[in-house]
Image: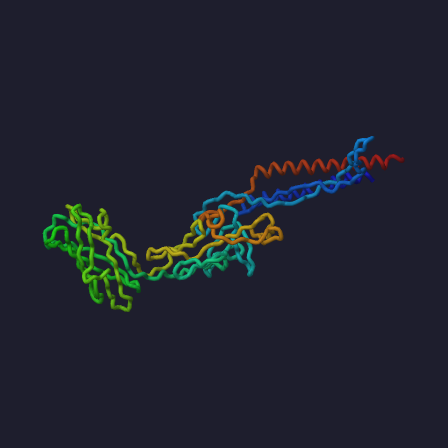
Length: 421
């Protein structure tokens, strides 16, 4: 019967407004889910039945419009809305939030998935994982010298807390201070230097400046204790301009550095003593005042153990070592899609590639994309509770109105049945 069209339309309205309510309910249920992205149901008109086709106008008669009756409504799509959620500070270095459009890449059971949930921890094997699922965060591991390899090949990110920072032999020492311009000939000024050999051993070197009979001239001599021996460049001359700035700083015998042999199996040391830039008031000067020369910088250090890690906005995992050095241990990589709404939800805050998502583009945070990482923070759900409650009212009224269509159509049918009594 003709009345069945309104019944069918009403049923489609009930069914699809119930689906709308399902989406709203899921959004509200995940109001506190880390990295959750809200869904949105979008409706469209179903196929319309044509009762009379339209006609073309002629010279004698005007055209007529078609007569069509719609058969109800259908759900066109349920979109996932990937706009940015608020970032909440947690002060946990391995809690990460993405500011931008990227996704973390995680591997579970040998397959890569994608997520915005950055609540990571380090497991017993040193891997950075999502503790709820065991999915392992993907990125690139640095080599022994802290260099990140090029390319986009992904691997499990592993932090080995027994990692050591190798010792570095001292090659440069910067000196600073003043030599008294009023000092008498033969006046000596001592400064103590600590240098490191290639094995990380410390060695003490004493440099003595002595005023000569010549104006604005001091000699210097380096000494060290056994087993260290000074092989060349262990003395020299420092001369100063009339304004007290450094003029020259030389090594005896034509040497270009202070050369030491630790005699303990470590490599020989060639140390450049930087007394400052000639003509500039920095480094060592000679003016009226107390004499005091000391080292302000030196580039050597002993071997160190890993103390802590941090993650910068570009995804680099930086290790802080007991010798004061900081070295890259790896880099977190992000994925980006042409159409993230085409991803398939698989639960546990993870997505897999759908047929309309496109292939992932892997990049460094802050590099080819505008996405950056925020360490010590988590992205919260982007569900707007006020908006969801408003949609809930709309869904309720839509369901209620379609229910009235069904009951009214049923009354029409009742009247038809009661025609013959």
